[in-house]
Length: 237
Image 1 (cartoon, helix red, strand yellow):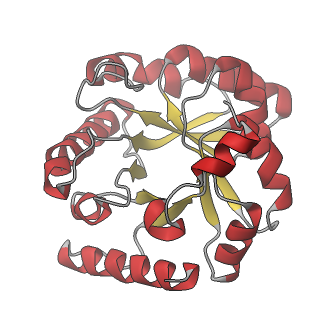
Image 2 (cartoon, rainbow, N blue to C red):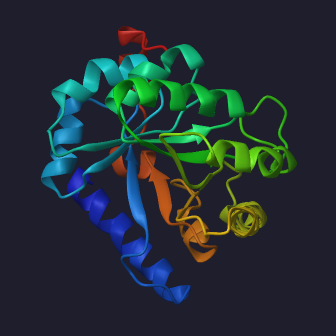
């Protein structure tokens, strides 16, 4: 199938999932995960009407984003090291993977210097998986107000990656947990958060049924990652 056909099919499935959940069909943002894919592929996707893209490596973004259409819009979705925050602020309009108070503080400091405000999502390790990045839920709730008080940083929601499974239904409890945590954050802050970024190629429909407002889809749109190309370019965070 072509990129246009892939995009159309994903959009149809998203709309159907929204209908099943009793939600407006346009209530979920599709973030096309373009890591390892070329600027030409991104341009082709933009020509089909897709403008939101997600990248997870700063070095790859630095090389690729300037080659992409000006109307493309970018979210950072990978693990962000403090020494790469300045570049993240330069290239991205949203950082979805903030997983510590210290990282949020560095983003705030760099945004002050750049006279820019950065929307952020707080990444949560909902399953408590060893070796996976993200806040433990109790730590997030403990530090939430301190992050919210930082200048030039706007907490817009939560993000999570559940444990991998070929059965989409196994992701549902984790999506539900993230939604409940989002509600808890809203109570602490006195205002509801806008976004739940959850769901990927294999489970995005379940995520939508559980309240996702952003789904991050790569393989189902672009096909398998270009691993040979990735190795050739030697992109690193």
